[in-house]
Length: 105
Image (cartoon, rainbow, N blue to C red; front, side, top):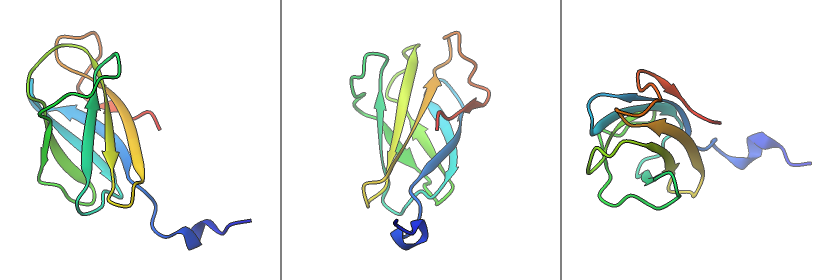
C-alpha cells in the first residue's frame, strides 16, 4: 500500500468559478502550482484558443476568455507536475448561474 503522504503535495483543486464580467472569471481553489496552465473546452470538447490567466497564486487566478459566446465550458487547471483539476462553468446568457458555480470534483 502506498502512503499518500509520501507522494508529495496534492494537486490543484478548483473550488469556485465566479463571473466578473462577460469575459473575465475569478477562479478560487488551492494547490495551484507556480507556472500553472489552463485549458478551456467548449460543450463538444474542443479547446478554446486565446484563453489567458493572470494574477495567479496558490489559491486563485483570473481567467479571461477571448469572446463571450454563451454556453457551458470545462476548465482544466494543469500544474507543472502534470496534476490536474477540472470544473464546469457557464458563461452569461446561459441557463446556468455564474454567481458562484461549484466545481465538479
